Structures are given as structure tokens and as C-alpha cells.
Length: 190
Image (cartoon, rainbow, N blue to C red; front, side, top):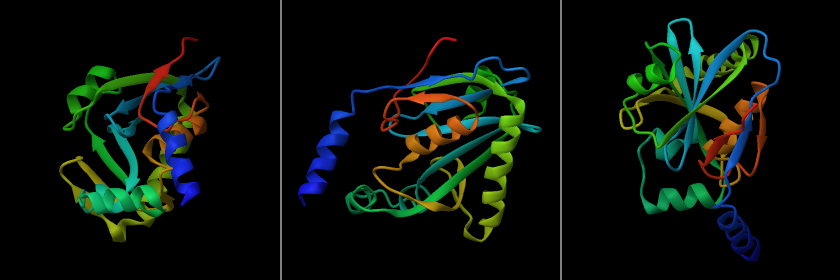
């Protein structure tokens, strides 16, 4: 129990911290990617040949099954749970206005960074493969406007949606500084 209390106190102490995103330097063939701060969680939007595609990661029961009670929240925080990968293709241009206009969910803030197009294609291919491999678990959630499939990495207090988006940003060549614990992002100037 002491480890749990210490962990929660540590988590709360990180709550005031923002997470900084530093875009890769010397991008030769740039594409914009968009980080959506939804308040408590974060999703990532990548350019796609048919517009843009939004990806999110979270606790399966909470996001896919819409089981959002105190018991579900507590279990998701106290031990690793099944995770889901959410996906939504949006027929909109890869611009801030296009992303905002294509969303059916609220956001508190939207950030964008320019990364190498090959990095975008690689991450998108990885996420699309993961999504397709798990289609047998498909579940649509209208509240989040995402279709979810199982994700192999368990959700936990120490690996939540913000941590996962930070990991995706690193795969895109960004440097991510800070805890990534909460959805408090800022983009550092070049």
C-alpha cells in the first residue's frame, strides 16, 4: 500500500508540469502532425491520403465500452488494464482549420509540429497494421467519435494516453521533454 500512496503522491506532484515537444531539426520533406488536448487525455492526428486520421489510446472499458464509473476509473488507475487503439479517418485537409472543422469532439487546445513525411508514413503504417490485426475486437464509441480495437500494451497510470502520444511523437522524430503525465503540452520554438 505504501508504494501505491507514494506513486499517487508522485503523480499528483507532476500535475503542474507541462510536456514540451521539440520538432525535429532540418526537416527536408515536412508534413504537419497535430496533438489534440482533450483535457485529461490526448490524441494524435496524422495526414492521410484521404484527409487526416486521428488516433487515440486509452483504457478499453472506459473508452470502448463506455464504462465510466468510479469502479472503472479506479481499476484503470490502480493496475494495468486492457487498452484500446481508437481511430477515425476525417475527410479534411491537414491544416489546423481542417482538423478543427472535422472533429466531432471537444478539444481544449491543438498543437502542430512539422516532421518528416517518411516518419509520418512509417508511424501511420505501424498504427494501421496494429488496427487491422485487431479488427475482430472493433467497437465504435460515438461519444469519442472513434472506432476502437484492442491494443497490446496495457493501459495504466504510468502508461496512459498522454504517454502513448509522447511515444508516437518520439517515433516521428520529436524530442519530448517532461513527464507526459497530463495533457498539458507546449511546442518549443525551433
